[in-house]
Image 1 (cartoon, rainbow, N blue to C red):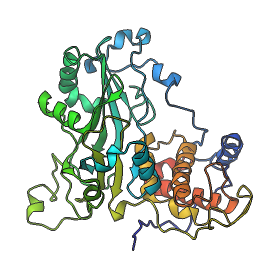
Image 2: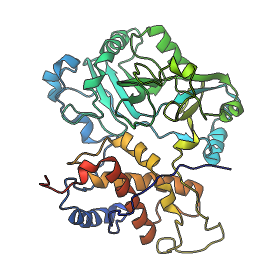
Image 3: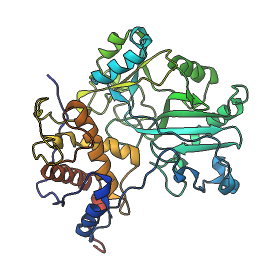
Image 4: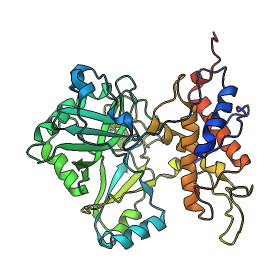
Length: 417
């Protein structure tokens, strides 16, 4: 029997007008939403596209000069390495995806695998370039500007500057122009579900040389050979196991190995003699082949308390014939996919909501993320099908209610004392 995460919503939730989930209707419906929230500090807006080829990646930044970002000539810098967002990791239960990868790459089925801790943080990347000498920081979807930080980065990552410079000095020997370090930014103030410690940390899980991913074993060898002072990879829970053994790995009730510098009773020493609490245990695990040099093949397996679905609603069935764009019965139970865990993961991708923030970003991205999972579990509907008015309304109601609980300061009346 599967268990799903739940969340409790207030009874006096804000009433939200219908909002289209397709691009054509987004602007008009968000304009109506802005009218309802005209008395609040936060303003809903249509999210701007950010990704490969976006002009945002070439905008000038004004980083503090002590961060060694070549700040004075930044406006004229030549971008050597295009940033490509790291793809979301597929869930271990997506059999269709696994079968497709095995058909295209038969060696994956018999390969040896590694199981690492899935850290509950925000996807974060650093591009370290040889010429011009610079470090560039990215969330999942955008380059982080000094005037628009991301959970305190890059200012709070000064501790890693020495290690980044060490990589930069080794690029010539490594015969590459740039190296991308991808990992998780986590700790104090990020998600706040696991007690990782009293500061923010960065743990890499993959590297790319001139945009080409290294294998897992190459990555681990690189991390060991460099002998970094502060930069540590994500913790390994199992290594060189079969795919079946990796897939069967149980992530429940395992105390995190990514914690450090904690001042709480749930310290590493205390957990040796005390029962772990919900805040001590890992979010889940990530499974990946040890030596595959093709497209990264990573699977995530979450602990039950971190699942993003409350419960699965009834399926329409493969034999149902209907126009799903207007069928009120399609996407039945969709709101069960809109959960606090899912919203927290969306926040980890786009950053925290502020009084001046874009409410529409959080609504649209959470609905899109939920819709992707719903369509995977219910192939009779597709991403092109529009949500019925009732399901759309209920989903958006839950998102705003959850945001009100998490960021009450963003929903206060203007000029309120």
